[in-house]
Length: 150
Image (cartoon, rainbow, N blue to C red; front, side, top):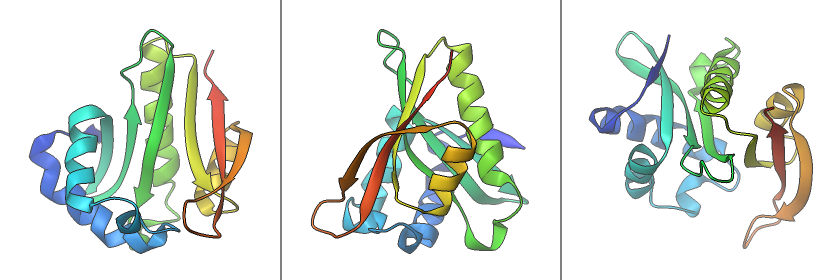
């Protein structure tokens, strides 16, 4: 079941980010300080998570604070390695999209590494590439993508 995370979930969210850090290319920790990033997301974004027993196994963060423009931004989605191939990323993305629509958002934007698993998830869900780029100080190619919600 998908749950809205709060600051009381800080430790388990940090643990998940730390566990999957190297799954991102470039790694999250090469771009941000993980403990500060965890707190920033829980403070300023809407974060949904999936627990199995008492362990957080997946999460998605969405900035849903620009009601005027109606544009949301997803800086993070991730599922622990041993819990992949269970449709958890799809559940998380569906929850985020549903909440954005409920709040009358028009567009969801994000960036993703070219040809990653997340890229194919987004493509399958109707996201379109709006720009290509290279991550700073790397040779890693990425896409800016968006999904029209209305």
